[in-house]
Image 1 (cartoon, rainbow, N blue to C red):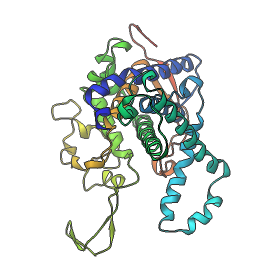
Image 2 (cartoon, rainbow, N blue to C red):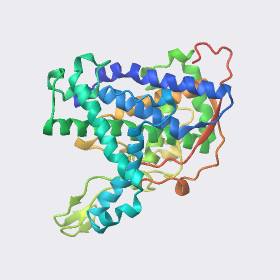
Image 3 (cartoon, rainbow, N blue to C red):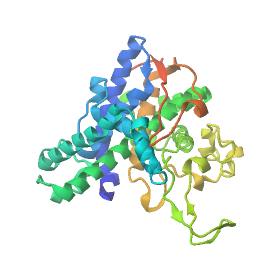
Image 4 (cartoon, rainbow, N blue to C red):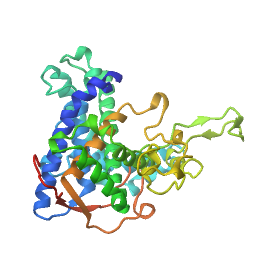
Length: 376
């Protein structure tokens, strides 16, 4: 799959991302004009799932356009708790027998329906390869990138890959951008520097491009700090069985299963100063006006939001591009005010197979500037 995430391939995907992002910005403009609130989590779920499905296998879900969940997203949300239940059942088999008491019948039905729809889309995609609207990730594993009939184990493999691509493209991205809204609104002092950086860097909305965004220090510092605190890889690393030996000065007996919690050590004072606070300054280079030497001792090697090694997420740069584009465009266009209750991270958030997102509602007002050219 590596060629699907190469530099040239990513550049070809940016117009597709922008198409959906601009549709969301237009929708935000309509709601802003009516002075109506926006449900941040729901809107980002639609956007990120639409993009992930289209980039993965040319699947058009039209959730942003229709302002409602596709049944595939319903199945994904239902699967979140189910995944944890099934994983836990490996150690506690009785949970399988108790599953009907934990899971509503609607949830149990949604998951098979989700895979049925995905299989239908993959089957359609393999038969109409030459008619695809644009290149996608799936073409990397289709035979010679030509329309063909695929069945049996080969089809099962392609469906599983498509599911992984969609989930991997949707969940970490939607979580990270939602969390950025959450942390911004909890820490309003970070918003003014962000407004200043974005609005000074781009004269018009249409000037906003992913290459320039890579070079802007404050939006990238906010992104890395968001990724650190929300650690999308909540499932931890794969377990390793100790042969019996010393690790980091501690003796680990033979047979003990060892694994790493990315979420835990990304919030540990052993690696980061003021570890549980949102402090984008820790990612700035010395010489930046907002650089703070208190964070100079941070161990940045402990920051691995997309894991590391051979299992590192291949779509990590796609997530970063989406993050920068969405935040930059909404900050360029609008000022943001939270209208829902103040959320507390420890109280209101939970992670199962995926993060749950408590309701976060905002009201947007058009940014005041001398000229609002090229507004969406």
